[in-house]
Image (cartoon, rainbow, N blue to C red):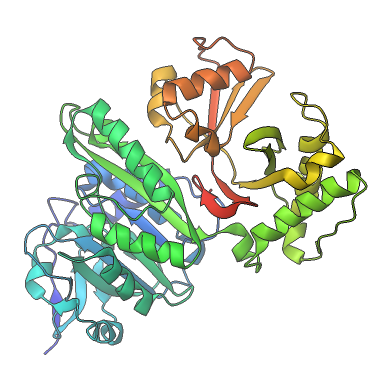
Length: 460
């Protein structure tokens, strides 16, 4: 006998009238920046009432617009709030659809039955009956996707590895998107929540699979996704980070919300699994040629012809030896790396040109920048609150003055206030100076170094 899981929180977490619900979701999506990045493979989005977190969730779902007609299956995971579960709970065998006021969504019963082969996946209609962490996402999915089936999993007492194993079984290709439902910190005061959530966001962007349930109620499915993201070479992008004090609630006890997108790193999308290593070879060969040293790098790959913005950093015996880069893509990626490598070695005004006898000891690092986006801030304190330590590269501009710090600089300047003060000094401003004309932007990087490669910071 076929059954449909009925709505449980329509009329409380979101409107129960179809027209009002459609208008609410459309309003959130219309207000969310769409961007031009490829659709993500996975999302993290919040699950509070729409008045509190709908705008943040919309930032995540707007990113799916390019794949509206491509995505055919959504794997949706959220934490249990009412019924204890050991493992991951799928709907019972008789359930074939989930309902919202906008209509029914068919379940992918074949995929669910496949998951049931895993010992950590159980069937539990009770776990789903009143669970809001999955339900609140369904109207957004119904509005942004043309047609899809659903694999809903209510996650209880499970390990990150058990979640990752389930995700791996359903990973699929472009037809499958993974959505993890989670809010962030709960019931802290506004300032403490901002600091706590910034730290959590930085760890998510860094793919650190050790998020606690105090940092995110959906910590378990998040950690499973982060393990899978690392395995599949995805990079994470922070799309939005706010709390209920920013949207519709008081500021003495707030709940944090974040929206994140996970995509393949740029050089992997370009069909170059070892793309980062090739960029390093191009940089080293360019410096070698200027020094009269024989070296070459095969730079014929087509993806190297695409515009790219990079920074090339040189280190010698653990100390900075040069760093020059581009903040906006204005030439082919191969040319940008080559020219920035030469500039870092021979034209950084802080250092003498690199000598031939230094070449072998140089350690080269290449950072590929994502597009910068403005940070709307009322004043310096607001700017400091909105920066994500460890994740954000920051551009500071005032008139003709401009300076930037890569996300890597957070390692030596972990305090946001000092980070911004030092950036002002770099721009030729006083450390305590601020003006309403100041412009702040942030970006992410993918970073590769000859001492080891890894993604760094947010990817945009």
